[in-house]
Amino acid sequence: MLDTKWTNSQFFLLLGLRVVIGYHFLFEGFNKLFASAWSSGAYLSQAKWIFSDLFISLSSSPAFVGISDLLNIWGQIFIGLGLILGLFTRTAAYAGAVLILLYYITYPPFIEGYIFVDRNLLELFGLLIIAVFSAGQIFGIDAIISKVKGGQNGL
Image (cartoon, rainbow, N blue to C red):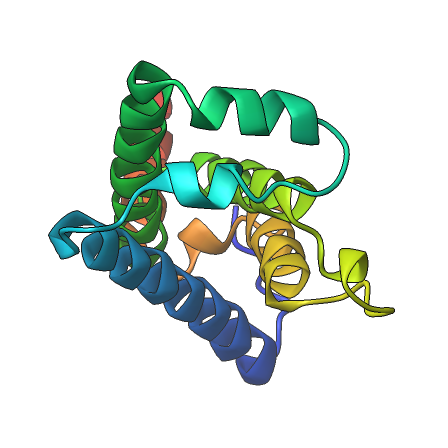
């Protein structure tokens, strides 16, 4: 249910956050889909933090890398579409947060410096905000579905 106590600024900033992060996911997914040389194997082989031995060993498995590539590409595309359209927004936001968390723990920024906060961590928290505040209820298909379900419950 949309909180009618939100100000116009809160309403549009939350919508903007959802669409901007959705666009970023969609862009990155299509960028990987059409890049002939992209593979998750190179990223996994550079793992530096916890689970680095696991990620590095998985990077040498062509089968795992193929599955990882598909999950990355199509995961980013579907997460992006879900966020932009406001469809299954909470699921898309949590799935995006998990994906970003995996990127973060594979190669965190503090390994090569003193910074703990990078764009991945910022985007992860943005996705959590989208999920917690039910941002799909703002100009999204989720809002339409909620209204239809609410109308059917009253019959």
